[in-house]
Amino acid sequence: MNLYQSLQATIEKAKGLEIPEDRIHILQELITYIQRKRDNNQDISLNFICIHNSRRSQFCQVWAKVASEVYGVAINSFSGGLEVTAFHEKAIASIKRSGFKAIQNGDGNPNYFVFYSDDEDPIITFSKLYDDHENASEGFAAIMTCTHADENCPFILGAEARIPVRYEDPKEFDGTPEEAEKYDERSLQIASEMLYVFSKISK
Image 1 (cartoon, rainbow, N blue to C red):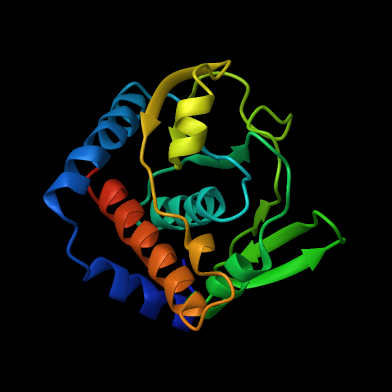
Image 2 (image 1 turned 180 degrees about the vertical axis):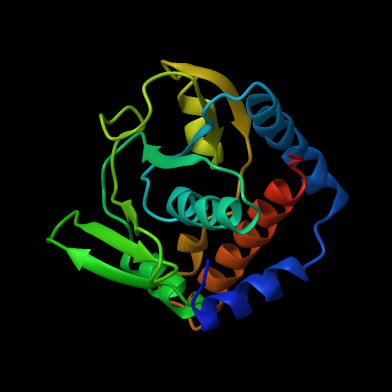
């Protein structure tokens, strides 16, 4: 797989980040889930869920797919929310800075075709409810990426596992001088942790 050069540089930077012990403990449940599915030769479907499906859950969907490709672990990567908004333009700008190519299709709540290589199909993503027909309906892990969604959505129909992996919201820095830095910081953290997760999956 020939990743875009600028994206490869971001991946190498993410691999070099130190993951704190408390985060490693949090990620272990996800690692165990993926490993069990792989050991049993079952499809691996991950649905990253946040309140608006606009920032953190979208970062997770994209980076999980790329990390799985880097380490040769076949997965289906989805995202969803409790409300429909749009893949936020500031999050799109951040993934572009990371080295992805993103093509918008439509207005309002558009589809985005997110490319990480010219040799692979793009990741297609847009804001949707977690139980949208585009997402897996059963046999998936619901990965709760924000506190609000985790606390206000106690039951995810069709999920065989519910795994909290929460992230701070870069939205808090919208309109500030630190905006781009904080979006990139959160994206890089998620990249680092998804790469760590898939690096731990044995064949």
